[in-house]
Image (cartoon, rainbow, N blue to C red):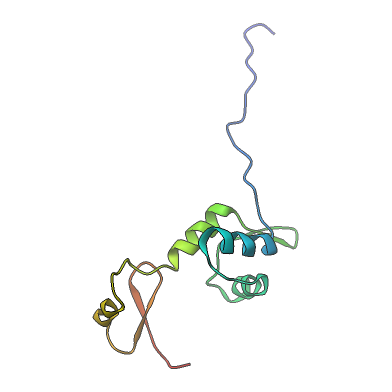
Length: 105
């Protein structure tokens, strides 16, 4: 077929990590110690990184792990005294400067 062009996919393969590898990635890339069992628990109760399933196997993309790790960081500060600007009884949560009540639990 003259003039027929083959369509080439522009999608690139995205490497997906199982929980053990995701835990290792978080440690090596972001310095975050999160055990595979912790990632499993967060997958049940919420609050963990986005994941997908291949059958019953959870898979994490490095991009989703990076985004989750970034969301755990506080705003930049030069001193712990800057934490005093948060109302007493409140604990900073995530990088969006939201605060959640400290229930003491």
